[in-house]
Length: 133
Image (cartoon, rainbow, N blue to C red):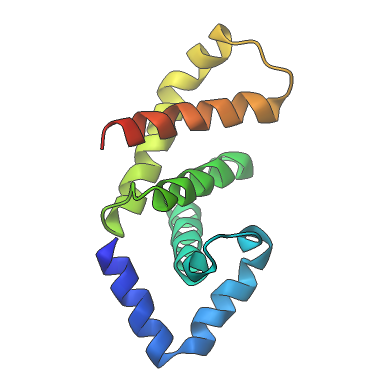
């Protein structure tokens, strides 16, 4: 994520108010982020995800958009993103994985809630991604 880190660092130096706007926009999602130094990077990552999902995958529902963003956030936190361009590729890969594997996944599990079911599915993909690094 060196390209993203460098871009955000430069942006902080040249337009701290612009960075702060993104942090404010996503403040409810960024609450509790530790270490706090990751907040501006995650604000940019979340914004990148939201723009990409709305432009490229407008027909998927909001829940799956949220799971996609959470997936990218989790991958960032464990160093699972190599460059900013990975965000788009991983989201596309996750959406494709959902289209191909979700029904089988649902047929093979017992869950209490939709949240637990879908969280488990997202983490299945997440673990697959971090296992391949």
